[in-house]
Amino acid sequence: MNSIEENLSFKHQHLLGIKELSDKDVSKILDLSERYIEINREQQKKHDVLRGRTLILLFFENSTRTRTSFELAGKRMGADTINISVSSSAIKKGETLIDTAMTLNAMHPDLLVMRHPNAGAVNLLSHHIQGAVLNAGDGAHEHPTQALLDALTIRRHKGKIKDLIITICGDVMHSRVARSNLLLLKLMGAEVRLVSPPTLTPTGIETLGTKVYHNMEDGLKDADVIMMLRLQSERMQGSFVPSTREYFRFWGLDANKLASAKDDAMIMHPGPMNRGIEIDSEVADDITRSVILEQVEFGVAVRQACMELLASNLPPKGDKNGI
Ligand code: ASP
Image (cartoon, rainbow, N blue to C red; front, side, top):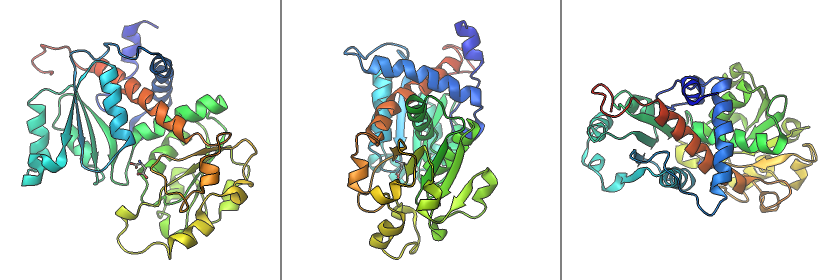
């Protein structure tokens, strides 16, 4: 395929959620990410795909992996990368999100990555930005680049996604990772199961084409992939679990519960991990099964691929209606 056809086949201005992607879009991002994995393993990691472009990172919630990953991705691709610290910005002086968006837009960013505690906030911002907006997590709604890097990790290990049994376990209710993964893995033809305590299961989630289990052994039976979720206390209003000790006993992944899955089942976690709450150190650190650090590695590559595709769709510089 030549580059014009390639660009035409990825038509999005923003990356706001998995919901707006097709299976072809996902495959395209994953294929391009493979190239970046190779480049990132070389000594010379820097190139100029985004040279001349400005990348702004705007995080209203804490982050280690996602923020570093986007920043590194931008820098390795030659973009001028700006990190806005929300705690020392005008947002703290009462500026609205729309005013912040319009202010940043006036500086002509090409790519803007945002994380926000409210579902829908990134979408709202995107209406006021002429460049490309990437969602780095909005409340319990979506975290598309996490799902894409998870899919890439699974595809590299299992050679496919279609027809695999993938079990997502834990605090599904508050997890944007669960939601984006469910959408993406279903789109790519996997059987996706959810295992969560009844108090942490969103009502009606089955309508997205998944089966909910309230017992780890049943949900993990014959699973090819196990994706553990963090217990997200910062999003909980009130008490959803009696105690973290009891939570670990029933819902934490340990060697005993793992025995229900296939012998070669992969163990995943988006991080940050709460050891001894949703996952036992013995399984988290089992290098024959756990791919948690590979997820982090592939995250950089996926973000590079997403930014390359979005930047290639931006109108050329100098276009008065563009940026
Ligand atoms: N890092 C992921 C997120 O931002 C998962 C988590 O925080 O538990 O959603």
